[in-house]
Amino acid sequence: MRDFSQIQQTNYDLIVIGGGINGAGVARDAATRGLKTILIEKGDFASGSSSWSTRLIHGGLRYLEYFEFPLVRESLKEREVLLRNAPHLVNPLLLTIPIYRDRSRPYWKIWAGMILYDVLSFDKTLPLHRMLPKAQFQQLFRYIDGDNLAGGAQYYDGQVTLAERLCLENIISAQEAGATVLNYIEVTQLEIAANRITNITCKDKLTGEAFTVTGNSDTIVINTSGPWVDQVCKLGHSQNQDQPIGNRKKIGGTKGSHIVVKAFAGAPKTSSLYVEAKSDGRPFFIVPWLGMYLIGTTDLPFKGDLDRVKADNHEIDYLLTETNNIIPKANLSRDSIVFTYSGVRPLPNAEGKKPGSITRKHILFDHKKEGIKNLISLIGGKLTTYRNVGEEMIDAVLKKMRRPYKPSTTDKSPLPGCILPNDERIEQAIQDYQDIVASSTINYIFSVYGAKALELLKLTREHPQLGTKITPEFPDIKAQIVYAVQAEFAHNFTDILRRRTTLAMQGNYGLDLFPVVAETLSKYCGWSQEKCDRSWAEYRTYIEENCLPDYLM
Image (cartoon, helix red, strand yellow):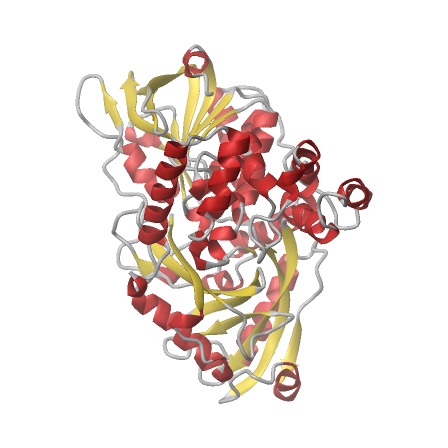
């Protein structure tokens, strides 16, 4: 139960609106520096843009073309921080670029970019790049289209297979540092007096209960709501006039869609591909992911409903066609697709610019210039750089509050699940629980939950039935369902199947799993049949509106 009466009696130093990766990073940094912090998210944590990326922790090689060297350097530095502080979630990823004579980026240009990328990542632990002449490239990648092939390049970046859990661990870390973190809380009004936001009116979307979050004379409100930044600003009204905060549109988001396909003929086994589409030259990725392949992304202007974003049929066909162009033996079709997803990048508004040329730099927009003294909105922000965004934001907050500077420690602080694959705790857990859970499953649990796997496995000692698999096809066990509700802020089927686990994305959109998930929730979490049925109906709606291709409807 969430104690809103206690929240209403508390004066917060920092109120964060938006619980994606950037909001989570801001809340974590604030709480670890001693600020009384509350984070409010209208849906589930990481249910927006943070959940819809290509799941790369990367420097942004193509940003070099737009001379955004500081952004690339920042990203490469943060990549190293994540490889060190979250090794259970972020892993090195080899990427290969096929280079063609008839595309927009010739061999020499890629080579120069590789050298500069290495220079800007001078403190990295990953290997340097290597260039591959045509003959060598074709030996290594025999199924890649050879028409006008000039050679290739290889370099390392990082992959966060479970991006939603990266966000979740930052939320958990913020809570452990003293922050109050709430999902399914919608902000309905920002009350303004004397050019300051004084109160924030909220509604619990689970119960309908309304309550107010109050600050003090120094309180700062941070708007990290991603594509919804402008919508949140419009909730602010003064006591004297019905005037929203600011009149200038700040977000000009672009839509990016992905498809997930089964393993296919000619698919790269040991490397991801970073390629230019044959039809229009737009870069996209083909990335091994969960035993399948993640392909994307598109980059289109978007002006629709931010809560209902779906990969269109033409986007799906574009990604299938371009993958078949680069790997002719693939023969991918719509029947190859296991899952699709789409989201909106919270980019700065840049009317008239091509989507790919819009800067990926983040902007801390202080609304003081619009007459509101205690509101800062984040415009932009990448998955890779979220920690540094949090540090920059709290530096600005402390300066704005005129409080003594206290340095951030998040770059040196491991996330709660931080553990290496050779940690002795994993072998000990196998010995302790192998009578209940298969050793291969225990290794899988550690790859998902890191050190937090020990808490999850304890549930199987108390209730051995929770050590059985949810479905024979995948290693996930019933304890994960219970742990999601008890320890990870999960409130419904969508939270459990889409963001606490990856079951929704691995087979029939998770639509076969109602009986086992409902039975587990009923038996171990006290859910009624009515609650299970209602949550399942909501899950089906979510899948239909956001994930199920229109051609299957």
